[in-house]
Length: 361
Ligand SMILES: Nc1nc2c(ncn2[C@@H]2O[C@H](COP(=O)(O)OP(=O)(O)OP(=O)(O)O)[C@@H](O)[C@H]2O)c(=O)[nH]1
Ligand SMILES: [Mg+2]
Image 1 (tube, helix red, strand yellow):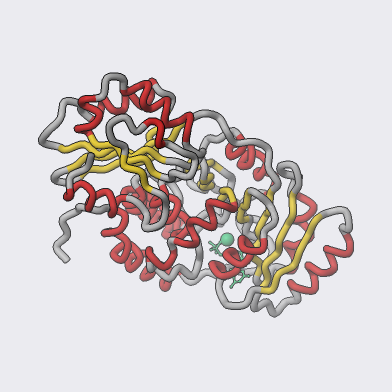
Image 2 (cartoon, helix red, strand yellow):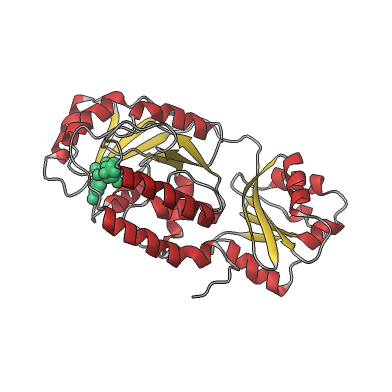
């Protein structure tokens, strides 16, 4: 039930991997849990006798990460986007993202049947020259989920961080603590290798500079467990920050890029680069598969995760956390290289994230 041009457009909106099902007349019985994306055209909705029932049938028969993509022709059709949203809401769906081009309007939505449950959690802690922060993290981090492992991922330290983690593993035999030495360089590589090794169903990054209090992970996990989002993205820019936590220029930069990338992601953001982000390990695997497609060569990790999640149609939810100045150690961050990278990554991904946009380059 899609025209050739619509098919081409849909192929660009959806990620390159995933099982796509274009819904046609009397197709209800073909719905099955292996479908990742159900595509419905405006023309099909126009002639359907009971759209609410259709959405309910879909929700009952697919899996809990299946997305429904509805594409409306801007110059044809009876339903407006507002009508579609009304149908979605009345059938217990949540709109995750959407957009418009010259010819089309689209929304991607998820069924809201409450499905998250208590899970095992892996806390991934990237650490480079963070010796003085290792024990405070272990002491301060409350237990999360049904079982929690802490995976320290060390690389390139000169202050004995690795040995300190080994000492802590011995000192706290009742805690599930692991040490991983990363094979390449950079924070991105460290967290990716941590995710790969993670045994938990849910993974979360916790920076070892202790800028975000580990105690607040309980609330982050609670938001995830109750399905406020499928990707909990911590935001440092909601609460007032104490002096010295973030230089003023960095704060403005953070606000600006969150706004700019929010448009690109199709989901508004307040902050992109807080260390803490939480999602399912199985969703991480899908995001990781998208990395070559996005092609940003992210050395820090945050952007590839957010862009990947947005492209998959995962619901990203901001979560406010407090942010404090570092006590031990110094920043591993070079703001200038990062700034150049952010602009480059924007230009590289704009066509993939905003299909159908007419660009001058
Ligand atoms: N394993 C590993 N960890 C790293 C590397 N670079 C940074 N980290 C860790 O990643 C976390 C974030 O790094 P920070 O130095 O706090 O830098 P930032 O948080 O991006 O920036 P500021 O805190 O604003 O200075 C910290 O826990 C670091 O120890 C790296 O190359 N390898
Ligand atoms: Mg930091």
